[in-house]
Length: 197
Length: 217
Image 1 (cartoon, helix red, strand yellow):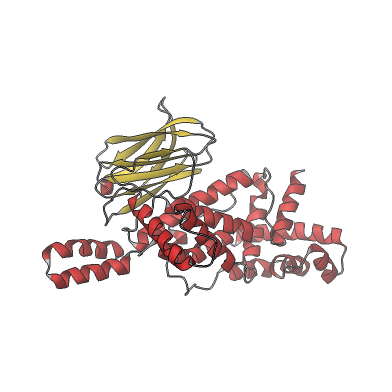
Image 2 (cartoon, each protein chain N blue to C red; image 1 turned 60 degrees about the vertical axis):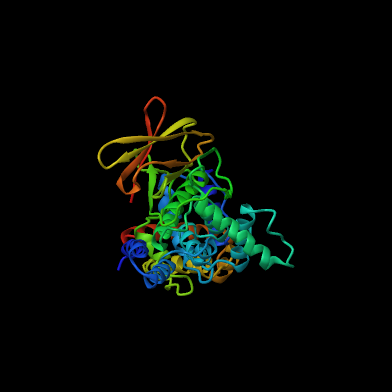
């Protein structure tokens, strides 16, 4: 049964039923709506952060944007709404916050949030997070690159090596490592486009 | 110069730092997106830091009621519960009978003191310009009375804006007037309309020019 339908049934029950109906009413509402804003926060903060992180690729910005979503969203939020409605609202807010971030920082949109497609990020309670799809996407891109391009990107983006450490690891100068990284990213972008990412 | 800024941005991403802003070239978007995609695959960083989660929690609670929440650990649990009750109350109350507010900033959660109905239905929409750029959002909630909340950010327009709600029967309701300063503005207002019958909303200037429009999901 959909949350909306169950919500409607819950609302219609108390007026027509005995005390048993009233108990059922309370139980159904409890399962469909957040009890308090703390529940909204605790259940969604990790998943919203993960969504933002996947869109900006760095922790400081992901934290700021997650904060902005909650500060913006909690103001008009009504706890009588169903969990699904609250999550959809959080995603809509996240979409706006991310779009504003890109306008401020780069003047154009690099990544975006689609509330329908990205609903999976908030679909389940936290604590049972599905595995991230980011490693698979990255592996697909890297697998299509020449060895040296793949290696410099692995060292820099996946293995947390500084440019100096990456240069040492590949036995090239720091300058060469920078050029290699630049060219590798250009080719990776073409591969990603071909893969439809 | 832009290429140097792009390279610095990509290096910051790889190093896990906050990249500096710059005016990016549209042809660099694919590279930026790919770098973000690769960086997002690094194990561990897609989980929020516990310190961040707790800090934001405390900030949200304190914004709702600064006199209740203290950094003093002693008695924190009791005060936290009180603060949460205040925030929870404010969340339910916003949009109540007398909660008609206009604000020019996206400020903190503000406790209200007016009872509001429960069991509402929430509908949301995203304001977009004619060329598809996301400018803000609108939330409408069914109740007695119903209410709408919207925020706008990032538009170049500064000045007075009128929000018009569009109903499925083709009629239009002028919902409220608010100001955009620095491209930002917020409107929160009660409305006497069946939220389920709303189709969309438009933001128009006093001269009638449409700044952005939204369709309710």
